[in-house]
Length: 272
Length: 350
Image (cartoon, each protein chain N blue to C red):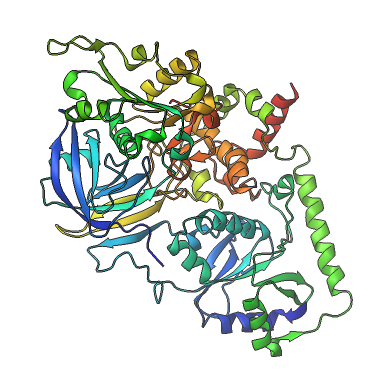
């Protein structure tokens, strides 16, 4: 039998600074870890603890894995102090991941904000694997400031990958170095060039953003079964046992972390 | 079914104690309550009582230690789980029906499904359970409100029912049958009337339970209209009395939630610890960045109720409460689950 609490030895090969508060850790586990887009890992910093993160790298690659992490607590503070060569540990993958099968033949709307762009990048890699399988891939990314948009070095490439892909970004408040759209990410969801009844929307970001994105999507005509949200809770064991990541009777670590809004819309204070 | 007299039963336990650590219920003279105690020698401790009602402690700690190491680093091939020689055998005597219901519920969560907790499973595999019928009920007992009965029907190796001069014994597992066949000299065939004597005690305890709880309604399984009906003031009312000590969840035999954390042991070594946790404390569901989905005590009091009486019904098919009443005894604020049933029913009737 395997001990599910023991992580796989992993080496930090490289660290990329994405934004002032987000770094991407390029990891090489001792043995390959196959994951689906949206599934999450428990990343251990030796002696400090472990915390849940969804990889931001291409799910087709299992020998290496990238995880983009916001500095925001005990484990992530320690992660941000690490140097290439450091030893960490990985457990997982856990959860269901994004409903990729449902997206085939559909118009896919991807809405990300802040560090929520990280899991979205794994989703995009999965979609970009064969963009022709989807009618449209519409990407809407937002951040507070220009330099807080993760992966911006890749946007031009993504936007020109295939004719059915479009990418739009926005920042919350005006900035001298920004000549693009200004406003919350919800402000670029009004005039969607999407046939909404034939579409799925997937969103990841801070809870407050998820709340207002959901309200906006409902307003522009999406129905709850068409909306998938990457929910935030304290996932720990990853196996539906330790009890702390519930949304209603679902455990995000086994039933999510990407939840169909239709399943959780009745839960009081679903957005915290 | 077999009969064993009291002297031979103690002899049987002495033999079984060579297989593992023996635990028996012992009545505390001052409080009259039963505590589960390790019996290290014979004769058994004064006050040993196999019938009575459930002990103050549940059997939870045999399967899930209060605090245990689940991984150590560095460890060559630490992923491989090794159970050989790691887990002592426990012979637990006098467990009651509510204890067995609870074990079965926690087994469903920690053993069944896509993932198994190998530590819990190994400890469970190393338990020999000799359960017993209740012969009385405590004021806080309310298993009847959950449709449960005060005598074990499954989940034991052997079950004993006290009657005059000894016990009627039933095997509930292959291991239980083996214990009987390996110790035939201790057992006799039951005499006419002994089964009826057992059934009379069972009926008497059921009647006691019904009398004890006649002012309370049965536990209500949540339904969609009821979920909508229950107002927040129900929970803030309970929360106003709660002192957030977590005794209810610690004492509860079906509360299985745990905390994983890492402890540094030196520069290069550390261990991962699993410890009991309580959804009633503020930090339980807190995320990095200090956000928590249940910031108010009333949210947490409500969560305790919903986890047991709604969420686990939806995910695991039954109410995760056995009616053992330990939470009532443990609560320094006098919060009584039966009272919550009554308030829920009152709101539903509105």
